[in-house]
Image (cartoon, rainbow, N blue to C red; front, side, top):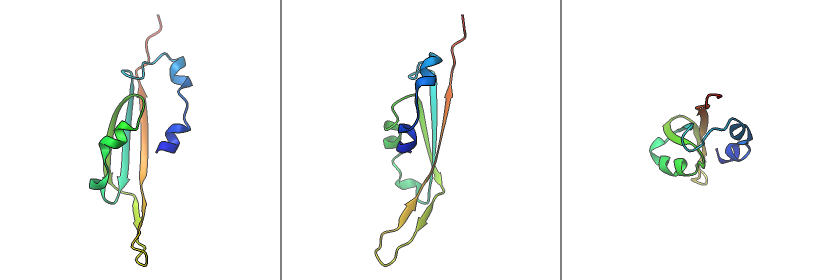
Length: 89
């Protein structure tokens, strides 16, 4: 998720004159096999702009590694951004 966020640009949002504190809404959904182990508040705090909601659901994939007792955890994440665009005067 962090990689996707850091690769994005806010230039378009600035051009539209959207106040990212009050007019931008960021909805995050994370799918993992053990949703209760994800700290949704920590995910929310990592997002620098917008009014953020985080939902953690069952999904993703855990791949067992019985030899090393170190499973690979694959999470799926979706980030939707909505904006209230000011009316032209």
